[in-house]
Image 1: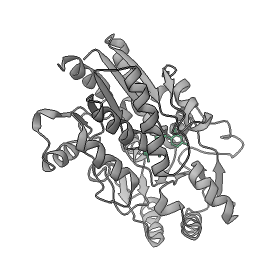
Image 2 (image 1 turned 90 degrees about the vertical axis):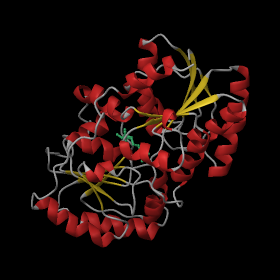
Image 3 (image 1 turned 30 degrees about the vertical axis):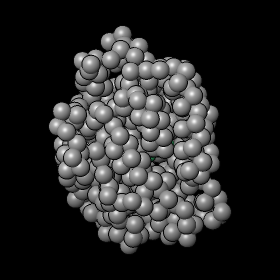
Image 4 (image 1 turned 120 degrees about the vertical axis):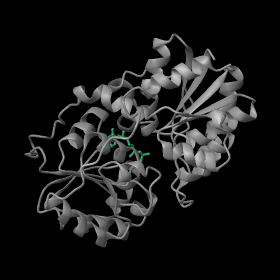
Length: 358
Ligand code: UDP
């Protein structure tokens, strides 16, 4: 393969494609970068391009906003035109967002090979749009690049041929390791009198936690009442901001801030006492940095962060939060280890394999 189209649409995608772009450049493999426009503003998109040295996309399809179906349809229509105008040997998609699924369907229908980075992870929770995106994408993928042995095994169980599965490691961790020395203290650090290991980081954006305003308020009350008065930093996802605004909730311990750049966010995480989240990618980053992590979900597609890492699944019942915080405050939180091949070289492995493909 020497002509590849890369797809990126939403925040976690940008973090995942950065090392792939750098490895393709190093190998002098030509590529076209398509931004679908799913996330489109400074805070959810452009800042990542700058901080992670991702070149300007060759095209932006500007398909932001709308319902799941509207966005899927808009991306498919725009990407079909783009791919017909600029044919390629392979379309490479990452992660599990709407753009991942929409572009892989378009590619396959235009008889173009599809590679999926972060293939095979499964929460088995069909209530999550991401799970549907993963299943559809993996049903039509030609080359499966996996982050763990668990993910490879899920694919085997689904009948994927062994010679299509490549266990390469985790590109999100490539980005973490190559940027760790560049993390930046956020501007509000001094103003909020933050002290290393004496604050929490909170992120919430899954529909199950944030779409019902009452649920969200119960969760926030339970957290802020049990953190021994330590500050809770809450960089708020646009989806959550809308709901929280309606609720009028506020608490002296809770600092609601705009979404942060990658370098500022991971500075906060690396120096935090603990992270409370419903994100997937963040549980991988806390595992590698050895930061205690509590996940407010009933399931995870990343079992390695629990089996090996520092993550615990608390579920969506707010009553689980207080006992978990007690364990943390009594210094009993598990230490964890780093999963195999999360070593900063996943993108190199992917690009080497791509170069060898017929
Ligand atoms: N992240 C960030 N700024 C923030 C919150 C998250 O840079 O304010 C990064 C985080 O380090 C991780 C990624 O965004 O790499 C996770 O994105 P998100 O939680 O939106 O997606 P998920 O992993 O749940 O798919």
